[in-house]
Image (tube, rainbow, N blue to C red; front, side, top):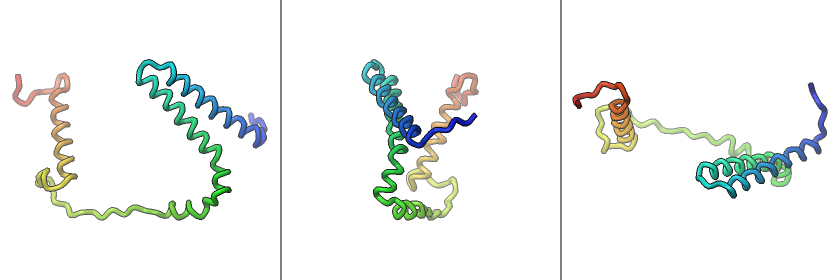
Length: 124
């Protein structure tokens, strides 16, 4: 069921949602005792900020003529240069990527040992 709505009414509805998000986030942060509740209030405020940006985008696009800037930003591409593959035998002191992989595999092995029901490798 489609209900016709004017552009003005739609903008007013968007603005009301943004205002509701800001008020709700502020109240949640104001009365929260725990940090988790304050984080939820921050999420409300962040969502309201995003809604405000979406609401203001057509005005900003017309005002600052973003058509000249956005195609330039959109054409930027990152082309990484692949390094030589030295295999798994390389020590962690030789490179950051290999050191990260080595420490991640060590953490993974430790977590496997700590799982309930997992077989120990020499303990016990």
